[in-house]
Length: 85
Image (cartoon, rainbow, N blue to C red; front, side, top):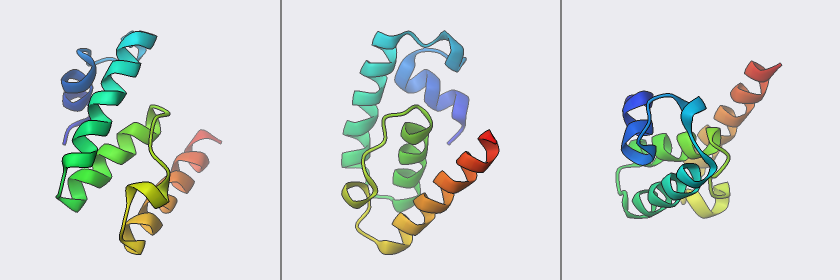
C-alpha cells in the first residue's frame, strides 16, 4: 500500500493538506468499512495505521484480535509520538 494511493482511494486527494473536514469524515468511514471487511492481517494493520495518523483509528482491543497485532500497533503509536518530538 502506497500512502498517496490510499489517500486518493479514500479521500480523492494525494496531499493530506488538501483534505476538507467533510472529505476526511467520509474517507474515514469508508476506511472503517474496508477495515472491518479486510481479512489479511497486514492490510488491516496498514489501514489501521493510516486511520491512526488521520485521527480516526478504532481502539486496539476492538481493532485486533491477535495480541501480536495489538503490540505492533502500540509500537507504531510510540514511534509516531517520538517522531513528533
